Length: 255
Image (cartoon, rainbow, N blue to C red; front, side, top):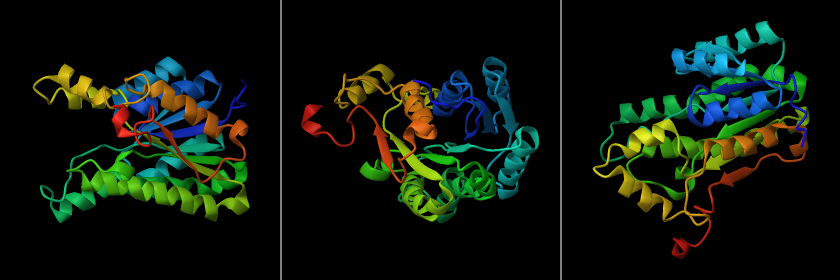
C-alpha cells in the first residue's frame, strides 16, 4: 500500500531509540523526511546516518528548546506535515515513594513537552493540514503501581488527544493516540535486568499477553503510526488505538 508519505516532513520526539526509532525507520521507508528530536546525540546521529533522517539534539524539558526544534525543522525543510509526540520514560515516581517535587518533574519529562511541541508546530500543521500522533501507555488505563507521574501523564495525553482532535477540526488536523502495552525496547530490556531472573520475569509477562503470548515489537507500533499519519487514515481522528496483542481489553483468564 502506498501511504503517500513521500517527502512529507514528520517530526518524531524521542526518536533516537525504541518505539521512536522504529517510527523513524518506517517513515523513511515510505519516503518521508523524518526529523528526530532527541537529547541523546550519539544514537540520534547514528540513526540519521542509517536512515537519512535529520537529527535535532534538544532536551525537551525546556519550552524554548521545543520552540527551537520546530524552528530548525522549518528553516531546513519549510514545512511540518506531522508531529509524533513520543519522548518519555516510566520513571517510577509513585505516591508512596515520590515527593511532590518528584511528581512535577515526572510530568515535565512525560507530558509538558507534548503540549509545547504541538503548540509551537501548530501554525505549520495548519498550513499543511497535517496530523498529530501521541504515544501513550496502557498504564493510563490499567494502572501499574508505583508510577503516579508516568501514569497520570499518559492519562492526560489520552485526554489531550480527544481535546485537540475537537479543537483542530476547523483546520483539518487529525489527532490520534497509540496505546502500547508490553513492547520490547532497549529501555524495557534494561528494566528486565533489574530482576534477579530476567528470563523468568519476561516469561511471566508474556504469559499474560493473549495474542501469541509474545511482546509487541516496536515495528508493529511503527506500522500503525505511519498508517495513522497517512492520507489512508484521512477520516480517523480523536482515537486511542491499542496495539497490544489484546493485553488491555481481553479477558485476563486468557492469560
